[in-house]
Amino acid sequence: MSSSVLIKRLNEARKKREVGPLAEAIPYAKWMHIAPETTTGELLTRMRYHDSLIGNTHLPAIHGGTLGAMLEMAAIFHLLWETDAQTVPKIVNITVDYLRSAGPRDVIAAAKVTKQGRRMVNVFAEAWQDDRSKPVASASAHFLVQSDDTLPSL
Amino acid sequence: MPTSPLTTPEERVALFQQLFSDTIPHNKALGIKVLAVARGLASMRLDWRRELVGNPETGVLAGGPITAMLDSCCGMAVATLLTEPKPFATLDLRIDYAKPADPKKPVIAEAECYRITRSVAFTRAFAHQGDPKDPVAAAAGTFMLGTKGEVTRSQMVSRELNK
Figure 1 (cartoon, chains in turn red, green):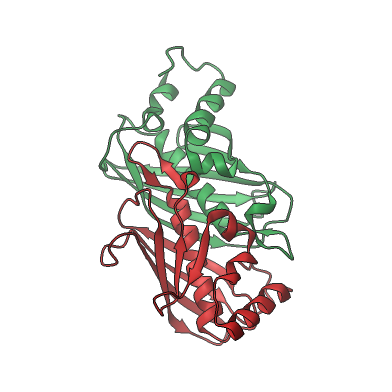
Figure 2: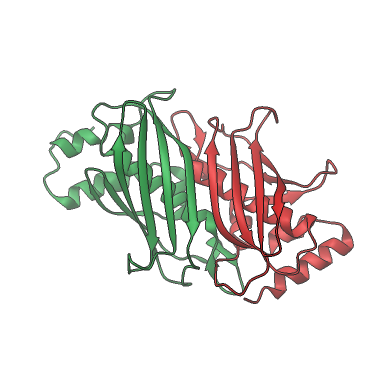
């Protein structure tokens, strides 16, 4: 699968050491207000709060699907930025655990590689709001990083 | 709550459309359409849109919108089986991305709640683009019942199916 635009952006972003533009190459990330940032020195992914993220208007709480989506994006940004990926990782599966209800505020996520294989990578990602020690959701996901299999990339 | 019994499938779909898409901001933003509903079963549709694409070169949808629809569809299947209204929340959700969704074609989710206890509901779902035997994604979700917060109208909806 061709992914030259994103890889080109990635290489430019690496050169400038500015991770933000990565999200601009991904329409869904823009629409969701999901973008990576390195302001603390650590690569984090932030989903900026906006009203269309809400899943439960009574609590109110952010839709669980959006938390899964941003954890998936956090894992992808991590693989693109922290590994020397030259292809866009292809997601195989993701398991999301919902730990707390997420309020109408920004959600921040960090990811780490649990196991790097030659073709398959296992990534763990965790999302929180006000207090990093009280995550709202976590996820573990598998990505193919070297394969011609036709799985969805991004 | 509507007082008239839901006598036709169209009325049921219209009510579920209102409760599970029109009044849930994220589902409304995704443009989710409720296709069918029965006790323990739910089906929804997500239309392709440029903003939902993950890779602009291929036009393939990102995983996120499919994840969000499968979560909602599984939740709707749970709501059809509640014997009494109670709040519930997703406990965990696994998505297997079987293959890329064809660009510009809608994605259909079909969910089943196959077991419900006092505390937990178990669901399975598939997403496909017309042929259920050729899925783009599969999901397994569990839901915790009797969580905090007040009961929402969508969590009272099984009453409407019992009429």
